[in-house]
Length: 248
Image (cartoon, rainbow, N blue to C red; front, top):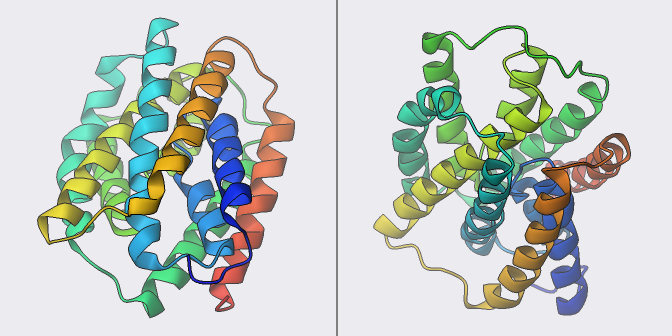
């Protein structure tokens, strides 16, 4: 960290809490990790690989938990993954300058905050299945964004699926979790392929995220009230996003 606003223990606790909240809805939590790392003044060189690594761990736990509960449908997931994985690898190979990376992340966080608000009253009833061409296109766009920024893409895939009626809440959560794992692994692969290195400071964050992800996904795969969590997450993401957009 570079003299930021959060010290080590508080940052670790914040990451664990983010993993708990996000995993309860099938997400890896990258946007929240990016938010707290941004508030801590962490450099872009640390932010992206850390978010991707934490994503793999937390979304991997979530995938197992939601699959064990019977909510994962492979036939729904694979069309998104076909294009997302290579595009995430490509995005991971691209190192954006700090001057571009931080505003882009700020925009992503603000959009994620809006996402949590606009889906508060989304009807939990699947109405149709995604057209194959639409799934391929969505996968490509979100995969590239995942690799570029360090988010897994699920935070944008899940509201789209809910708004278009492609799946119910828990099936959407299971789909997003696996989508995030695949994109995050591909993004990390691209990052490492061009000489990127993993931050040595990540071990306490991994432990906190793993614990939070296990508890959150266990509760979320069976039951959990979502409205209050979405509002809280929207607030954190919005604050961090605005901070980055303003050059903080």
